[in-house]
Image (cartoon, rainbow, N blue to C red; front, side, top):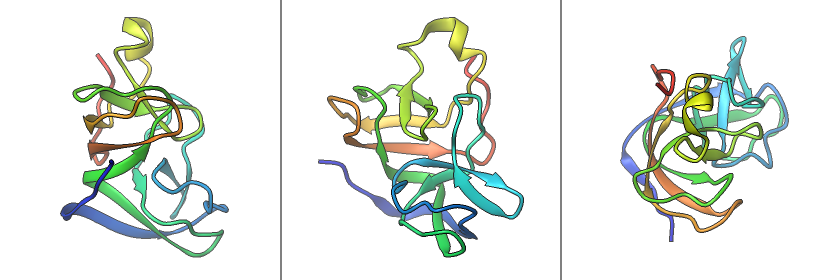
Length: 133
């Protein structure tokens, strides 16, 4: 079962720039002074959304630390992750070197998920993410 590591996280609040009510535990990115859902594998997320705000409401975002995250595919403990096109977490190793040069490493899985759309636990560091290779 996925879990939070909330006392040891860096979190911030931003206005939701879109309806994020179905984006809890997915990567979000900055859009001006607001956050919106990550929409491409090349996006550079600011963090993982912790609540489910509608447009204009306060979005709570984990920028660094432990968080639950929705998986795009099966995730194993130790996988380095990046954002899939829908803001879910994908394992970099599954895509090889070609994709590693186009995505930003966002964190590492510490509690696995066995399939897409499941909740995993990861340590993320989105404040200054680097390319995959």
